[in-house]
Amino acid sequence: MLIAGEWVESSSGERFERNSPAHDVLVGSYPLGTQADADAAIEAARKAFDSGEWAYMKGADRATCLRRVAQTIRDNVDALALVETLESGKPIAQARGEMEGAAGIWEYAATLAYHTYGDTYNTLGSDMLGFTLREPIGVVSMITPWNFPLLIISQKLPFALAAGCTAVIKPSELTPGTTLMLGRMIGEAGIPAGVVNIVTGYGDPVGARLSAHPAVDMCSFTGSTNVGKMIVDASKGNLKKVSLELGGKNPQIVFADSDLEAALDAVVFGVYFNMGECCNSGSRLLVQRDIADDFIKKIVERSRTVPVGDPLDEKTKVGAIVNQMQFDKILAMVESGRNAGATLELGGQVLKSPNGRYIEPTVFSGVTPDMEIAKEEIFGPVLSVLTFDAAEEAIEIANSTLYGLSAGVWTRDIDTAFHVSRRIRAGTIWVNTFMDGYPELPFGGYGESGLGRELGRSALEEFTELKTMQLHLGERTNWWHRP
Ligand code: NAD
Image (cartoon, rainbow, N blue to C red; front, side, top):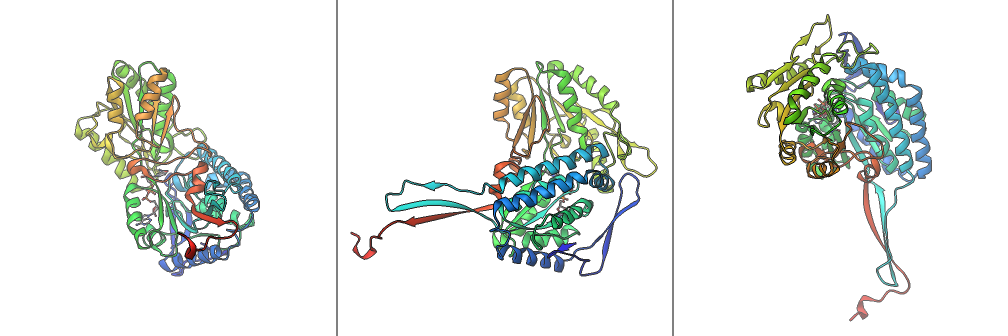
C-alpha cells in the first residue's frame, strides 16, 4: 500500500489474494488494509494538503506531473491491460483500449490544472470589487469498483489533482492491481509524497473509514446504489461532500424509422460489452411494436455469434464473470425473468469451462415494466426486451425505474430524437450511437444513479470550494458615521 510516499504492508501483517475469474489461478496478493492503515493514509493526505505544497503549486507544474502520468500509462498499456484482464475477466483487447482511454483522461485533466478560476463582480459600486476563487476542496477519499478499475480511478484522481486536492484511494478488493501500478507512476511523475495514498482491502473497514473520517473533506464513490447510500450515511459526521456514480438500468429506444442495422449492432454491443458488468449497460431494449418481431429475431441471431470465452484470447468479446457472487446473482435474475413469464429467446445457461465462470448471451422478450428484469440492474450479459407503440409510451417506460444514468435513442426523425432525449431523465443520452465517452463530456446520473458529475470541466469544479472575496477600494465610510 502507498502511505506518505512509502510502500508498506498492512499494520496487521495480513494479506488477501485474488484468483483470476477465467482460469482460477492466483494473480495477486495484497496487504489487507485495516482501519489504522486508513487513518494513517488520511493523516498523510491531510498533512500533504495542509502543507500547501501541492495546493499552491503552479497549475502549469501540476499539469506537467499529470501529463507524465499519462505518458507512463501509455508506455505500459500492455502490462496494465494484462493485470486488468487477469483480475476482472474482461477481454484483453478491450482492456488495452481502456488503458489508452485512461491515459487520454489524464492528458485532458492536465489542461484543467491551468483553469481553476472564478468570476469577478464589477457591479458593486466604485469602491467595492467582488470576486470568487475556486480552491481545492481538500482531502478526497476515492472508493472504486472492479468493473473498470483504472478507467474509473482516472475519472476521479487527475481532476482532484488538477484542482490541488490530495487523495486516499481504496480500489475494489477484487481488482487492486492497476491502481497500485498507478501509484508507482504517480511517484515517478514528481507528485510529492503523501499527495496520493492507496489502501487496499475490503469495504468494511477501509471504505467505511474513508467515508466516515472527519479529516476527509469529500468522498468520491463509484459502485452500487446500496453502498452509495451507506456512504451518504457515513458522511454525515462532518458533512463531507459526497459524489456518487452508481448503477443504471439504461434503455435503448429503437423507433421503426431508425437505421436498424446500426441499432442492432449498438444493442448487441451495449448489452454484452464488459460481460454486461457495466453501469452504462444497455440492458433494456425498448423497440417499436411494428418492427419488434423481426428486430428481436435479428438480435437473437447476432447474439448467438458473439465470441464468449477466455479473455486472454484476442478474439473474445465476452469474458468471464468477476466472481461467484455476481455469477449467482445473474443466474438468479434469469430465473426471476422465467418465473415472471418473460420469454427466454436465447441463452440463460452457464457455458461449460474447466475453470472459468461464463454465462451465455441471454435475451428475454415479452418483458413488462413491472418485472424485476426490467427494473433492476443485472450486471450480466442479459437483455430485457420491451415494446412500445408511440414515443410517449417509450418515454414513460424509460423513466419507470429508480435509476437515470444513460439512454440510447434510435430514429432518423430529428423531432422525435430531441423530444424523447429531453424527456428522458438520465445524465447521458446517446442519439444514433451508444456508450461513446470523451474526457471533456460530463458524466453522471439522475435519481438513484448518483450525485454530482465526473469528467469535463464540471469535474474540476466538483473538487473545489467556492470562496467569495470582497475588496474595498479607497477610504471606508466609517460605520459610526453612516446614516
Ligand atoms: P460495490 O458497491 O459492491 O463496491 C464498490 C466499492 O465500495 C468497493 O471498493 C468496495 O470494497 C467498497 N465498499 C463496499 N462496502 C463498503 C462500505 N460499507 N463502505 C465503503 N465502501 C464500501 O460495487 P461493485 O460490485 O464493486 O461494482 C458494481 C456496481 O458499481 C454496480 O452497481 C455498477 O452499476 C456500479 N458502477 C457505477 C459506475 C458509474 O459510473 N455510475 C461505474 C462503474 C460501476
